[in-house]
Length: 309
Image 1 (cartoon, rainbow, N blue to C red):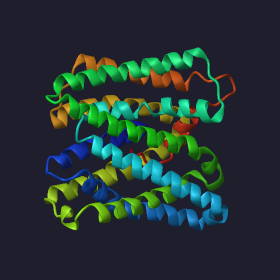
Image 2: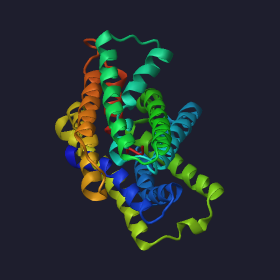
Image 3: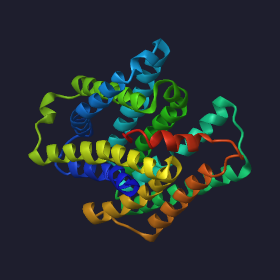
Image 4: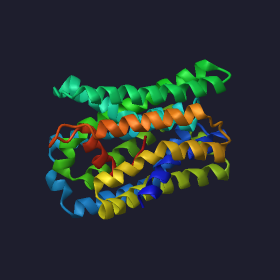
């Protein structure tokens, strides 16, 4: 279940790239994805309400859900979809995989946390791997400026998601993980629809039938199914083991990009993936004895929520 969940999340970039092949815009693909996923988020929210979630939500909790939902599920998704127009799916997944390093920096700069030197060495290792993957894209691209544009957009997506993770821990404990994910996702769905209504013509949704199939598959197999599968993996393995399987994600995306999209795959890119994954895993395992680092908390949080980024 954990491997299937990682594969589903990793396939998101592949679905987006396939949609681009039919001249669908990033905004249209995101709109269709959220539209198809909306009923499932509504069912999650309804089930949470029946279990008393609204009784745990005051003004502060409501504002937190709105702000963090906009940041983590709306902005992160929008920036990511735009960035995928310019870079390979493999580089995109590796850049997004760096978000625990940003959570770490946020915890140091704004929460007063301190971590040992080995944690910072792991951060350097992770970014060295991303640099190798970036070099692969720069070498393969005809226009380097486009690659840097894509890196900037996906980097902004990673930053938005890291802010969401860093800020959501307290509210998850108050509201409940399922309720928080459901309400935040509904906020993002509404935001995406409003964004599309104000920035795009509705005719942009008149697309070949294949695009609707791709968007539906993205909503089901890269949003809804992975959340359910990962919840089953957590039940059988525990959150730590289940979340550790997510390290397969970047490698799965690399090979799916190569096998399905025909993207180039090199030893440099694989080496970058190994370094990045190794660095992030070391960060998650380098906390002080008895202390749970933000990255470890984020693994448990992410294991219960849909990965919109």
